[in-house]
Each structure stands twice: as structure tokens, then as C-alpha cells.
Length: 320
Image (cartoon, rainbow, N blue to C red; front, side, top):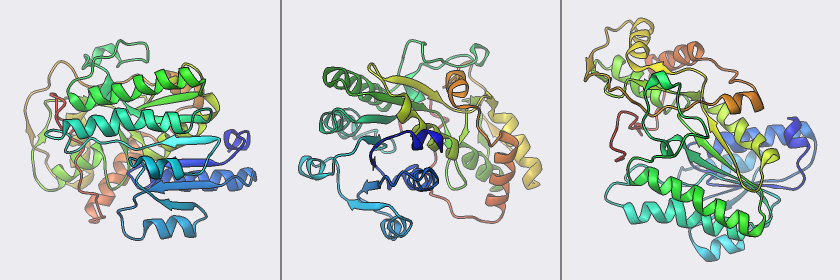
């Protein structure tokens, strides 16, 4: 990977045990090996999934089991020229609003201070935008933010705190507004496909979505290290299509040989992002929607393992 070859120093991934973390670490290991730079990939997480830390270590990562929300643990982490911050809290945030803000806004500030001067890429979300009509084409990076609900507000807090502290210490940063990454165990497509497969009605109240293959999201996150700046680069990361939930369910019905059922009526707005800036900078996703639908349908039909964490893409009140 050319962008990784041009980076100096080691890579530190905070939140390496989350949904995106393991695949991002593995991609970084492959890219750095191909680039031949000899840089270390340091994977940091509490690693609650049994065997994951051992597996990443066997694949070449330097693994540190640590809770980065603990100031002492954060301070003991090794310095690194390149830092990817993936830690965040979404599910279960309703009723735990204070803890959500601590994870999504306070902790990123502590990380920005601890690694001031390093290149910092932080995962954010398209939830910082308002709901918009599909006819708008989705929100661009220049669209005024309008977060709905405390989770989205806390994520905007993350962006504001990092922007402030990075500017104060001249730390080059990038903010990745992701919306929605999908893989075979998790994501909007899995939510829809499992409902169709299990004979449950698909809620079309939120009538349109964006999705993007998680591998592409990981690639962009790593490549963004070369495009960090002060103020931070802000980048929407998603696929190029605005997808109809009703149409997706219908297509899954054909692939799974099921007749989909529906509930609700399409609202005039949805959470939608325009990622043209990302596609111009890094190229379009290399896995398209048709492929993703086929892969997802086959996975669900075969009873492949799932993470069991619905995305909640149907929620319009921002409560997760």
C-alpha cells in the first residue's frame, strides 16, 4: 500500500478489539509487510473477545491489553508517529448518557493530549448530520451539523474536542464520518436480510440508507493518515448510492426465496451522507452493492455467525 510506505514510524490502533479494529489491524499488517517499512502495528484494547488478542499477536501485531479510559494505562502506552482512534460508545447509550459523553467526547481529548504531535485519525459518524430528504443526495462535509439525540451530540463533541486540542498542539488529525459499514456478521444489510429470512417485517420508516464495505472503510481510515492536517481533514466515508430499504428487502427476498413483509411508511428524511470527496481522494469502494447483497444473503442462508448487535438504523430519535 503506497500510502503506508510513505508513512514514517509505528502505527498504534486504539480500540483494536471493536467491530472495525481486528480487520483494520490485519489490513495494516498486510499493507506494512507489502511496503517493507518494518513499522510495528500496536493493537490496544481490553480484548473482551476470547482468543482475539492471541490471534492478532500470532499475525504479527504487538498486542497491549489495556483500558485506555484509565489515565495511568493511557500514559503507559508507547509513543507512536501514527495513531488510529476507534473507541466509541453507541449501543446502550440511552440511560447512560453521562458515560457515553465520557467515552465519546472526554476520552478523545485525553488521547489527543497524550499523542500530541502524532498523526491522529479518529473514527466519527455520519450521525452528526441532520436527517435530510433523499432528493438532497445526502449531507456533504460542508453541510451544517445537526445531531439528533445524545449519542450523536456526544460524537460531535468528540470532533470539537479533538479539533480544539489538535489545533492547540499543532497535531495533524483527520475525522472519519462513517455511515454505515457492513460486513458479514453485522450491519444494515444483515439487519434487513435476517428479517427477510426469518419472516419478520422490515421497518421502512427510515426509507433510505447508505452502506459501505468495511474493508473500504478500513482502507480509507489508514490512508487518511497521510492526509491529516490542522485543522483536521473531515471526510464522509460511505458508498456512492442512496439505497431504498424497501428495495433492499425486495432484493433479499429474491436471493433468499422469501416474500418480504413491511411495516411503517417511508418518512421524507433519513440519515444520508454524500462521500464524493472521499471517492475523489481514494477512489470508489471496490466492492459494490450487488456483491454485498449476494454475500450477505449467502451468509444468512448458511447460518453464518452474527455479532447480535442490530444497528438501530431505523431509529429517528437518536436513542440507541
